[in-house]
Length: 382
Image (cartoon, rainbow, N blue to C red; front, side, top):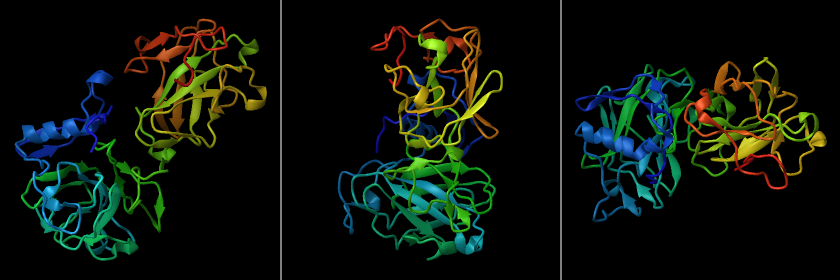
């Protein structure tokens, strides 16, 4: 469990006794450094509502793993995916829940309690396979829900509401291991999934599993996982620097820097770059690793004429207007990022995103660092 993970888009949560209501996700009005970590946010909400969360036991129970259900601390294991509305079989036999072991130890979940938040129905887990460290396990409402291979089952008394629902995962002593406030209304045959870097974001699955869209038994925590462009989220993919008027001839070495602010690798294959005049070019076959900043140049590699800047890729012929420009990153109809309109650019100096609101000029500053081997100022790639 890593309490230093932070989020930049938080839900507005309203406490009502020990229940919570989650309206639409809203952007938090706070500076980046003031945003609470996921763990701190969940702990604070539980404390405000008087909900007891699990702390690491001072003793070790006896079971077939290094950690038993009674030993688990809050978020050692969390609910990572939910299939509430299967389509290749009925809800009564085809619903399933995926959990993730976020510890360095094997875990025995038998004895833990899965509870339906809306109905209060509960199921004491009794036939769950041992979870390897940092691994997923699927719990089904049956031994083979819609052809999904499961690692354990839960009672048919738990019904995952298609219109939105929530879950509690408890230790045998009732202390919370995890709680899911709610997921939105489910599209038929499409699961919702999350990860430890995005506990508050439930994303609709886009990967095919048979005739449905889901990722049972694997996901963002797995090595080599790449989030599809269709799941890219606003606030997770930034244009972090713009060089519109470089010192090279004819502005042929204009460049922009993209920053993946998320916790998982992100595909940008098919992402559109659109300027103020509506000119559009696509990024092709590129993956940004978690936290990576990468430079993308104008035109193509054969015409690149700036040895001091090494682009990771190229975006075509969207020319950055030195007299005034704005840019957007777009996936289909979704605008993932937008800059303000810059009235002009200083020759040989990039603009860097330094603030929270990317559409405000106050969030952009002129670079002051020299690019090694160049007369220009900027910080391409770092």
